[in-house]
Each structure stands twice: as structure tokens, then as C-alpha cells.
Length: 472
Image (cartoon, rainbow, N blue to C red; front, side, top):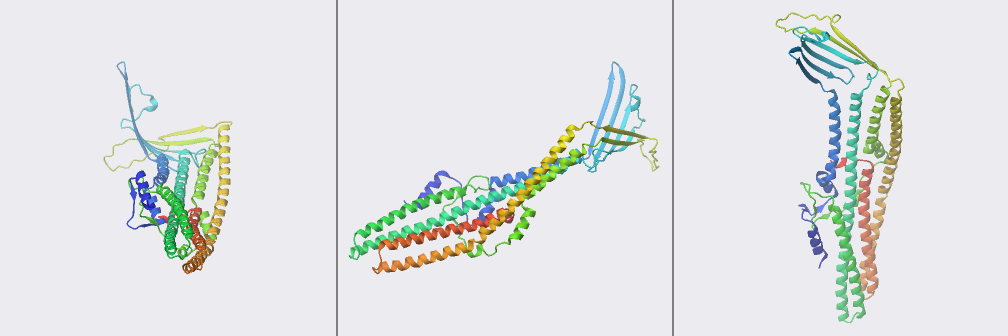
């Protein structure tokens, strides 16, 4: 049974969903688009970013205006105590100052005298100002700063997750690329060995070769048949591994249709532009998602540190409320409020004497901040060196590929020359088989190195942190 038929039967047993394209070739960048659109990890990465946005929205909610109303009415044992109505509108601000407006109407024979209001009710407009603790930061502003930092961290994590995903896709794609074209070379060698066996049999019939030569030709066919089976198994495994990244639009697993093949690489276009190391390093140091993550984390911890440091201050808050009798305005008479006579003022003071909890929390925040800054320094250095190493590897690939291509061409000439000598009876079957084995091995090596060169380019983009962003 031919290996292609074996492929179809084997894959059909395990899969029902088939991914196919109108074009029979699948490029890496076409596969990237499919992965970014349908892959579950890509969807999870999107959720990570959405979670940061949701957290930021929640933190901003601490500054939403609030309206509330309260109604109380008490009667007991045939006695009427009071009726109390209170409506408030409060506006928190990011300066720590809260503005408040309220309407109060209380009535009753047993009402606390402090709570008496005019018959038409009492209007209040006031402000609450932190003087010590809470002047520069407070729990609400700390939560907002941390939410912004966490949103940035989640966005950086999302980019890094997509970068990692696409690098895995590229690695599996070029493994499939290597196995596919390696199988073609082995299959071509097997067919050549069959043709040579038939040619040897004909020459034996004419008496030009000894019968023992047919045994040697047949052994070569057997060896290449075994290599062909092994290459086919490797191709199937690489195809299955690559299929792990392929999902349908309805999030169902799919696999590559057997008639799809990888897009052949053009070594010349692969090395058209090798990026300048310094510009790539500079760009990565400014925009790499790992560095953005740690910078955002530092901002988060620093916001917590500022809040903990603020808790060392005395808790001193001033409340001022202007009071005005409620008037139903039915004309355009001007109301002249008396701020000096009608007011309600409050001052709240609180201060722990030992501050052990506050000092401990502040010290812990400072240690976390220092630890994260050290980590940022380490990761920055690591990224810079990885980019330079990746550039060095990629920059040397053209010389390597050119040397291997020249080797393939020379083996090709050598094999063809030996084949002509064999047809003319000037060479042996053993020598031509050796020449052809060397040619096939050099061709497979060239295919492998081409895939490695292309993967090296993707690794370079990954190390720079821009692999996923270039696909959008």
C-alpha cells in the first residue's frame, strides 16, 4: 500500500473535522491568522485583557455619584413618635474631596430636638475634605491606580501569551515543513532505486551485468523503502502535532487535509532585510511585553506603597455643611443664604499610637518594590542578550544555507556524472548508490537548515516581543 493511502486511512480514523484551503499550500502567516482567530489560547488571551478592563471599570465605580433616600416612621403603644425623611446626593472626586447635597424633613412630638427641621424641610450642601491622611491618596485612588496597573499587566500578558503561542506554531510548522519535503526527497530516492533495479535487470538479460548486481540493486530498494516508511511516520506525527493548533470557527478541533502542503521557502527573500541589532534592542527595551508587565507591576506596588505611607499620617477630616430652609420657589425672588449662621461643621481625628501595623505594611511594600525592580533589571538584561544571540544566529544563516546549497549542487553533478559512467559500463552500482545517498542526505540537510533559518527569524521576532503584533 502506498504511504499516501496509509496517511488518509490513518487520519480518517482519528479525525472528523478537516481543515482545507482553496490553495493547496499553507504558509506560516496564513496559519498565524487561523490560530489568532480560532485557537482557544488566543481566546483566553483576549479574556485576560478583558479582565483587566473589567477590574479598571470596577475601580472607577468608586467615584460614581451616589443617590440614596431614607424614610423612617415610628409609632408605638398609641403614641406617635416621629417621621423622618432624608435624601442625599454624593459626588466623590479623585482629589479626595467629597461633595454632598441633601434634603431632610423630620416631624414628630418625640423627635430628638437636634433633628428638628422647618416645616418645608432643610436643604444641606456640604463638602468633606481630608487634611492629613487621604490628602494625596486614599483607598479609592489606590484601588484605581492599581487597577490601571493591573490592566496594563494583563495587556502585556495577553501579548506575551500570543507571542508564545505563535512561536510554538512556527516551531511545529517548520517541523512539518522539514518532514514533508524530506519525505518527498526520500520518496524520489526510492523511485530512482526502483528504476535502477529495472535497468539492472535489463542489462543482466543482455549479459552486460552479473546476476549478483540485481541483489545489490534490490537491497538498495529495500533500504530506501524502509527509509520511506520511517519518513512517512515522521510526516504523519508532524502533521498531527501541527493540527493541535488548528481549530474551526466553531471552536472544534480540526486537522490538515492530506492534500495541503507547506509553502516552499525562498532563501533569498528570507534574508532580504536583517534588522539592525541596536534598533531592535532599543525597540524591545521600550515595548517588550515582559518589560511592560514588570513596569506596570512596579506602578502597582508603588501605588500600594504610597497608600501605606499615607496611613502613617493622622486621620484628620473636615466636614462642612451649609444649611438652608427649603423654599418652594414660585417667583424669581433671590435667596440670600447666610453661611455664617446656618451651618454644620465636623472634625474627625484618629491616630494609632504605635503604628506597628502601618509601619510593617509599608516596609513590606518597599521590599516588594525593590524585589520587582531587581527582577526588571534582570529580565531587561536577559532580553537584550537573547535578542543579540538571535540576531547572531539569524545573520549567519545565509552563509550556512549557501554552503549547503553549493554542497547539494556538487553532489548532484557528481551523481549525474557517475550515473552516465554507469550507463557506459565505466562505474559500479555500489558507487552510484553511494553518490545518490550522499545527494539525498545533503538535500534533506538543506531542507532542515532552510526550516531552521525561517524559524530563527520567528524566534528573533519573539525575542523582540513583536511576533504577534506583526500579524495584526
